[in-house]
Amino acid sequence: MIDLHSHTFFSDGELGPAELVRRAAVAGYRALAITDHADQSNICSLLTRLRPVVDELGAANGLILLAGAELTHVPPKMIADVVKMGRDHGAQIISVHGETIVEPVIEGTNRAAIEAGVDILAHPGLITAEDVQLAADRGVFLEITTRKGHSLTNGHVAKLALQYGARLVINNDAHAPGDLVSLELARKIALGAGMTVAQFEQAQINSLELVKRGQHAA
Image (tube, rainbow, N blue to C red; front, side, top):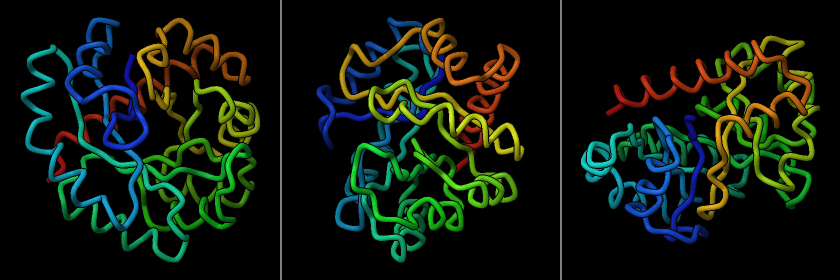
């Protein structure tokens, strides 16, 4: 299992980075990205804390660990600037908290994230066909999530992504130990969203591609 969306107590998660990584390793994960909630006020400090320790923490636990951020409720007009801040401070993966139907995300966030060239648009809710096409064109990955609430629109996201050729990844959005689902449960959630087994396996390959890209990031 590869999870590119997780949170520690540096935002609203329950665990510190070391414990989260350890629990993921014991659960059989091969790669993990820590992507705490970030905006223009804290993205630099988050990455300054995390970036120097990811290689050591990952190696100690036998998995690949990436330092990232999930831009959350950032006004659409500011997203590109905050993405650049994150890249400049060593982010190996950047996602944006998409227009989930269970939170009051500002309309236009999905489009702004795609235009800014983020790696992953997380739980994009009732994303439009036009934005899915743009994500496919720009190489932005769309997330199928195992997290309750955000997962209510997985079927919509999967259907449009497969129709327009956008690439999918499957993430946990883990905030607590119990959110680290097994590969088998992730597979069932993907199938429940209308994906085939082959499409689920492709999503795992997509995640691995992002991991390799992150390893080569500054």
